[in-house]
Amino acid sequence: MTKTKPNRTPAAAGGKRKPQLARPKPLRSGRNIVPQESIAGSALVLVIAIMTFLACLALGAVTMINDTASKWQSDISREVTIQIRPFDDVEMEQAIRQASRIALSFDGVSKVTALDDAATARLLEPWLGSGLDIKELPVPRLLTIEIAEGARPDFASMHTRLENEVPGASLDDHRAWVDRLTTMALTMVAVGTSIFVLVMTATVMTVIFATRGAMSGNREIVEVLHFVGADSRFISREFQRHFLRLGLKGGLSGAFAAIVLFVGLGIWSSNSLATPQGDQVAALFGTFSLGWFGFSGILMVMILVAFLTAATCRLTVRHQVNGLQNYRLVR
Amino acid sequence: MIKFENVGLRYGLGTEVLSDLTFQIAPNSFQFLTGPSGAGKTSLLRLMLLSLRPTRGIVRVFNREASSILPRQMPLVRRKIGVVFQDFRLLDHLTTYENVALPLIVRGRAESNFRKDVTDLLDWVGLGDRMHVLPPVLSGGEKQRAAIARALIDKPDVLLADEPTGNVDPPLARRLLRLFIELHRSGTSVVIATHDLGLMDQFNARRLVLNQGRLQIYD
Image (cartoon, rainbow over the protein chains, first blue to last red):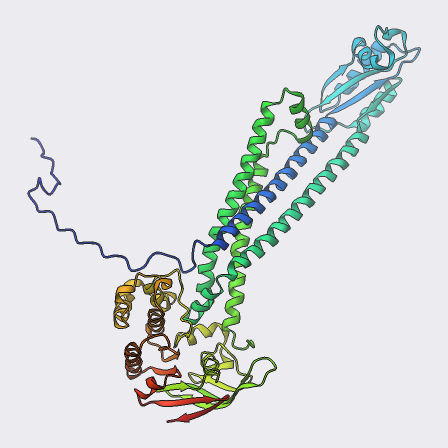
């Protein structure tokens, strides 16, 4: 048994097509009570976009400085040096082995490398010239100790044991360098953060004044709405919706431009890693990668700017409406 | 409905522009407010609309002293007072239909509930074929009629009209006057500020005459 498929076309079914009534012209134009397009609105979007871009740049720069400074700090604190000064009655090779054993006995020490004679000669070449026989000179020998990432070996005990058990040995954990670098890194981060705070303050003030400027052109609309019986909640909702849209538009444009810039710089720096310029830039600024913290920070700046625009608009409208509906105020 | 007791008004440190005004607008009453230009008609209308506070005296609206009305209660008071401004105050980016429907939109009414009322009123004031037009395209008289329609659309308890026939020709002025009279007969108190003697002669109504800041009433 075969099932016949129902034919749905009216012509095939022998039915008549229903006469289509002309759709009545809608009476409302669909325009919002607050006009969407205005010169003040476009200028506000541009101002918000520029200030968001600058704030995102400042935030990105602070993030990069912070990351690079931490990396310097971490790199230098992951390597310590043992120096063994020569003594007449000390067999240097034996002292090096003894010092290596002591260093490796501590948790967190991943590798100990002794600079051989050739490497030591190369280190001294700028001062003593080439063709140097290191064995003939009382030159101290160096051992570099690599520390596992995140580990903090007990340097005080290591220092004591080396001094007691290996004559002429001393441990240099670069504390002075680390301290100076930490201070420098913290200073740079503090300066960067201060600049970011200043840029954000300027952004906030600019957005507030630009929003108030754009709002002043709408004063008559606020008054008309009030006199036809709208309450402050209705009026502020209408304006806030419009200005939130403007804030998001400007914030999104500025944040997008900043992200494009950082991604572009990141691609450029990774492509020019092998070149001297690229290496120099990478040493100073890192790889221009913002990471999730930087990108979420940019997102937060954008949301903050949009929220601020809407909140300023709300406060301005409330202030205007309060002036209109507070009979106790002398006008 | 609106009651003034010894009301005086001065702007800044100047002399009083309105002095010792004592009168009332009774429910379902009709009155012309007249006087020479600069006599203070618009200021008196603004005092009645509560958009201006007197420097002395007591104003009562709907049996409440105006100074006791809280800001959040003001929109409810405003909804009972229809107002036609001398400069129309239409929103230029909204169509005539939307401008007239504005009082109903801000009250949260659905368009399906007010569409017929608005189109009927627009037809009545002769703007049936101009409802999709933006105000900048309307003539002065058309703007005037749109502003009147906006004030009437929600059938206010009191209608305050500032020179409502100032921009229209005599036949249309008579037609608008008939509209106000009809509104008055349906229970609304009407105050028309005008210095058009011809208009006032067409309907026998109470006259509030302002002269040099003082009010004389001819019942």
